Picture (cartoon, rainbow over the protein chains, first blue to last red):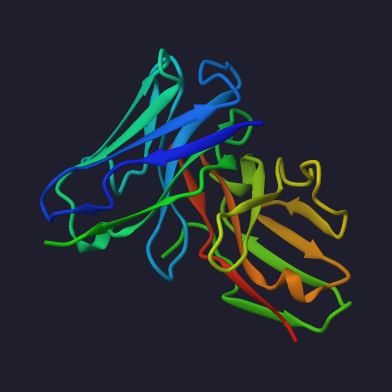
Length: 120
Length: 110
C-alpha cells in the first residue's frame, strides 16, 4: 500500500527557508504514470497547490509562489523535497505531500500532512 | 480568490440528496479532468472522485461526479451525519500550468 510521509522542522523563522521532505513507500517514485507534489492548507482555510515534479525532474509551480519555491526529487531514496524561501507568517500551514496521476495532475494519494509555523 | 468557484456551504437532511457545484473556465474544467475530495474535521483530504466521474475503490456509489462544459458537480445521495465535511474540487489549469482547487464547500447534514 502506498504511503507518503512528510518530515522537516515544524517551526521556521521569518525570512528563512522552509524545507520539507516526502518519503514514499509501497511504490516507486520513478513510475512513469505519476507526478509528485506539495499542497498546503493554512489553518481554517482551503487547499493551495504549491507545485509538482516528475521523477525525471520536470517541474510545475504555482505562479504566485514560483519565485520562492523549489521542488526536487531523489529517486535513489524514493523521496522528493520542497524548499520555500523568504517565508512569512502567511506561509504558516499544514503542508501535504501527494501523488498525482498524470491524467489529472491533481492528488490521488496524500501524506498525513505536517504543520509548519513561521514565527520568531 | 480561488480559480474554481464553489458555494461556501450547503445543507440537507439525513437521507436526502445534495449537489455541490464547481465552476471554472475553458483553461481548467473545460479541458481537464476534475477530482473531488472530502476532508473530515481534522483529517487529510480523501479522494472521492477522479477523472470527473470515477470512484476509487472503497468509495460508495452514494458519491457521484459529473462535468458539463466549464462546470462540475459532486452529488451525494442518502446523506449521513458522517458525511459532514469540507468538500473540494480540483483540476489542472492548462494556461497557468498549475493545479487549482476550489475554495471548499462545508456540508452540514441537519
